[in-house]
Image 1 (cartoon, one colour):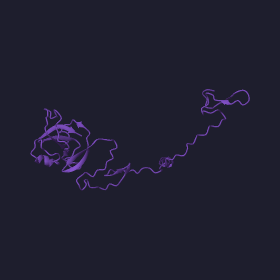
Image 2 (cartoon, rainbow, N blue to C red):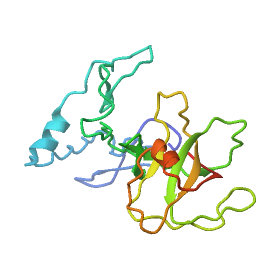
Image 3 (cartoon, rainbow, N blue to C red):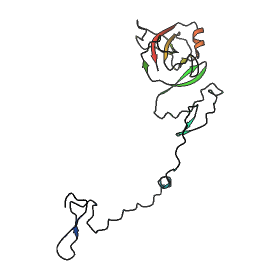
Image 4 (cartoon, rainbow, N blue to C red):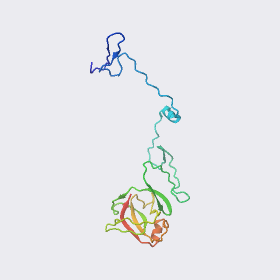
Length: 214
C-alpha cells in the first residue's frame, strides 16, 4: 500500500504472468525479482587515467605545521625553510611563481635589479595615516590637479619600467605605492634610470602625486 516501506508486487492473471511494480516499491524492482547487473565498462586504453582510477586513496593525513616560517610550498606540500638568494647573478629576482589565479604580473626596477610585482589597482589612502613606499614613473610630461591626482594620462617612454624605492624586508617598504613622476626630455633613452638614486640624482623634475596603488 502507498506509504509503506515494503515493496509489493501484484501478479497478473494467467500463465506466465509477470509481477508488476506498485507505488510502494522503493527499490525499483518487483518483489522477488533480481536487480539487473551493473554493466562493466570496457577496458580503457588510457593507462594514465586507469592508474588514477585504480589508485587507492592515501591513508596518511597531510603533514601539519603549527609554527609559521619561511616555508616553500610545492603542490600543497610544505618544504624546507632554507633561505635562497633573492636575486640571480644577473640581477634578476630569483622568483618561482605559478600564478594560480592568472593575475597580471609586471616588471619593475629596484636599485638596478629587476623585480616582479602584481598590480592590484589604485587605492585612496591618507599618507599621513598610512605607511606608503615610493614608486617612480618616467614620463615625458604630466599634469596633476589640485588634489595631486592625474588630470590626464602622462606620455611615457616606450619600454621604460617603473622604479621602486624598496622591496619586502626593508624598513621603508609598504604594499601601498605613492607615485612620483619623473619628467624626462624627448631624447631620453628608456631604462637609463633604474633606481631611486638614479631618479634623485638625475636633475630631472620630479612631481610627487596623491596617486596610490596597491
